[in-house]
Amino acid sequence: MEKLMKNAWIILGIVISFSHFSCGNATKDKLNTKMMNSESANAQLETITFGAGCFWCVEAVFQRVKGVQKVVSGYMGGKMKNPSYRDVCTGLTGHAEVCQLSYDPKVVSFETLLEIFWQTHDPTTLNRQGADVGTQYRSAIFYHSAEQKRMAEEWKQNLNAKKVFPNPIVTEIVQESTFYPAEDYHQDYYNQNGEEPYCKIVIKPKMDKFLKAFKDKLN
Image (tube, rainbow, N blue to C red; front, side):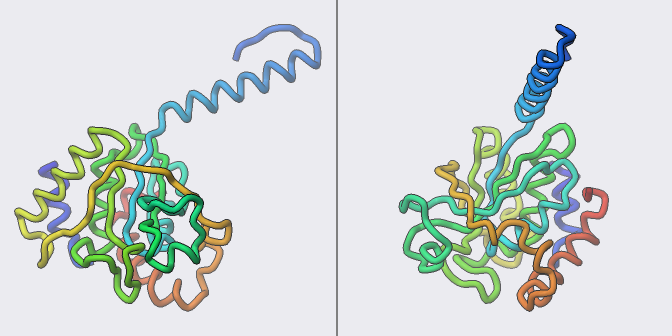
């Protein structure tokens, strides 16, 4: 933690079994083995859900982190069932735009993910990130385990105590709730729409800083 806290100061400013020989059985064995391997791999992954403003930005950042296997943009923290993007944009559903990460803790630690989270958005502005204003853009960590909660709260407390940011951190740290994946056109947005004005003006500068500060953590 001490090493990562020092980093936070420095970089501030800116996821066979063999059997019978018949063709049918061989195919079945391969499928079973593939399923077993997939289940084994998935069993080793952990999940965390971050809200840090527009999910296009958050997705673009964490897609490039070594050890993060999957990033899905979506909505969490509200009361309405199956909200659409239009619903969430009203600010009335209670949902935050989030990205749910599946990551391999043997490759990337939760502390590293927290470090990246804190440094790639402004956690001191309530219900906004830049020109994106509304409760849907709030800074939030939706933890999936007691250990994630402990570590997130410890980071927040230490960052505030050391006054790493000029203003107090307002990031909410709450237990994960129902996650609703966003519409297909929101997924992999920056990679697919890098030339769009929002991507060039808002996301790219943030990405440039991230890629420089965390070059040793990239895929």
